[in-house]
Figure (cartoon, rainbow, N blue to C red):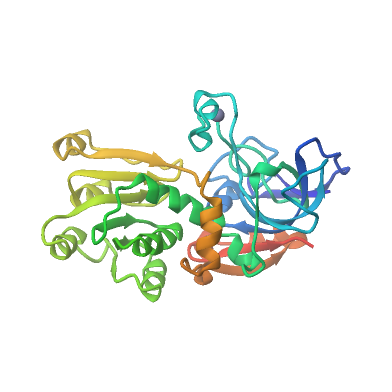
Length: 337
Ligand SMILES: [Zn+2]
């Protein structure tokens, strides 16, 4: 077994371990490809601190290498998407079978060791078999689509309604496509021109940069003065909360999507004055099967987000010369041979 160990910010070391014996109900997965996005780079660079040593990697696709006991669901060589969320199974939510609401959720590559290794033993409940038609590169985005599906579930989506999406990251492009698929109207707001251009190419009609346009006036015009009843702010984005409030209708729902160390000042006065309902969604747990289906049917297009392929053994050299801006639109793909 081999794994990249982050010993301290920007210091990676490839280590070899003795192979493990798999426990009952577990499956040994040979990891094929791991996605490296901005949030992983923030952990690598130390912008987001972890307890070291730490193994990066939250999104990966693998192949079943060994199955413990008689498992009727998986066979050797099945290609699988790995769900990184491990519910605690002891909190009240878990006991009520509401695993996606677990209050002590562990996430591989975020608050526990991740997937940048060649083999990992996992409970079979975290694995989702992939159809042959879906390429491994596209399947790396299953967790993003699943997360956006949970955001959609939390919103009150109505046909024809305008949904404001504030996003400095590529996840907003996936959410905008889903909003359109469910027949609402996405309004994509980003301070990154690269993301705005890609959104336009994906057929998202309303795209605005708040640094160049008065977004409040634009939304006033396109909604006929009604403003937006549903808004999404990706929590790792850089926006002035004033811009977000200014496009919200009275009684609007604002979904804070994702988790990030970034702090935003929430204006209590604005929340009260407009009777805003603010809530968070941070994971894709429970939506993996639907996400796989939306990618295989090409309802969600992630072609523009697939970046350079990096060989596993050269990862340290590659990350040392990576600039975080390189990862805004395209994620790197680490190929493990
Ligand atoms: Zn729990």
